[in-house]
Image 1: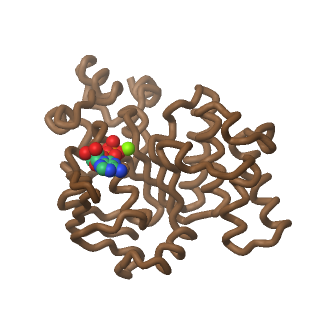
Image 2 (image 1 turned 120 degrees about the vertical axis):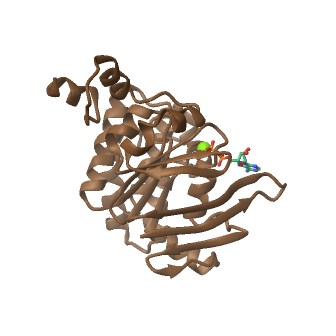
Length: 264
Ligand SMILES: Nc1ncnc2c1ncn2[C@@H]1O[C@H](COP(=O)(O)OP(=O)(O)O)[C@@H](O)[C@H]1O
Ligand SMILES: [Mg+2]
């Protein structure tokens, strides 16, 4: 379980990233983060990942207070995986193979185990053909796929996806969807920041609405995303299924248009 208590994070040059952020995330849950650009989603992920040390507040991971020491950060890397919004920040090795192998290598696995993890995740993402390419030869979407494979190869318990669907074509969006479902089925905790209200509404157990570095609501999809005032505050439309049910004049609990169509 992750607990954040009154977290404040200010960037070195003075910009407020997070202000008085408190949040509990249960193990195995699916949490979506919504908010306009600059709302603080990535800043929050960087705190949860142990990279940004908050100036105020507490971060409690599995009952223990996380102190952001280098030793703790190293242990954290085994537990929490972070897929950055921008894959160019994440990829650094000379080839896709080396990039994905880097994490497992650092876990101290032997060559055979490393190769097995690389193969498994190349297959999972459907990117076997990219194995020997250099990252700079890849499209942005392909880089994102490789970044995801690299994080999954570490087999973390908690995975943070910063805008995972950005730049992916439809086929790879579907693959990413399946991967995320599969991770949850394995009991992992998955946090996703997204600009897609329909995805968040259908997928999440808990939705966190952020604005100007603060959390303005954290609750079920229904309690957050059906609230027009809250959604307006974060500059987002209501999920299409909610708009449609309203237009049709029905009280619906459907989380997707597909489910709504089956209901009526
Ligand atoms: N590296 C940085 N240096 C200074 N300010 C930053 C940096 N990254 C983000 N910020 C600022 O922190 C605030 C929150 O940004 P961010 O967490 O990136 O939001 P989001 O991911 O929701 O778009 C914004 O005001 C942004 O300009
Ligand atoms: Mg961001």
